[in-house]
Image (cartoon, rainbow, N blue to C red; front, side, top):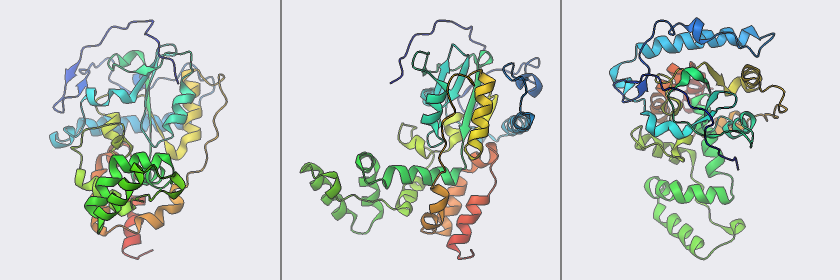
Length: 326
């Protein structure tokens, strides 16, 4: 467990305005509004990898432009700060803010960026001009599949928790004779059936997707559904001014860069990032879906694809699977 300590330093809060979505945002200040001033060369980098920094410059420029042109409808999909602030963690020793997005190696990253003796606590948000603010994101279709695989297919105690929270409802709604499976599960749970003999519901990916699409974006954000809700609903990139958006697909390079940027490069060895198995089972799981479901998922994650700069490669692969055009 990380030890939480009170802030040993207070920062003045900047003036806060409210956009139509209810998100708190800082009013425009021309003296601080240029991307150049936002993405200054990190002092910690003696020989910075300019390729990564140039990429971030382009990414932030594009994001700022897109956010300024969002329609009122799309702005309303950005959740207010109160709903998402538990996903932000501040370190007041090294002056940075990390946005925790589930299923993007976030627990590993949290351990890497915070030590036990340091200040780690949910961020109150605001005063981001004093903090280096960053987030790591992932291709939406692969992140969704990763959430499903880790929570509903591991055959252990964790799967029981998620089946209790979501699986019972999912199976009863979307599986033929679902009530029978639910009754059997509850009976085994009440008799304390051992895990190796437990009749897991084994929610299918198709059932899981049905549940997500029916629930929609209006579901209140919590510590369970944040594993599959759009990352832009968690990180609110149009309401906060990020200096760095790393990607799971280039995790090792981006983490190395951030560690040096924050001045943490000599404190702890870089963790071993294991190859994700998600891509290997993509064909098996997404081939269960219908064309309609895939198109609906693409719309569900539309703002992730737009604001986080992902292309249609994986949605198109999924469409080819279900149309048998592989």
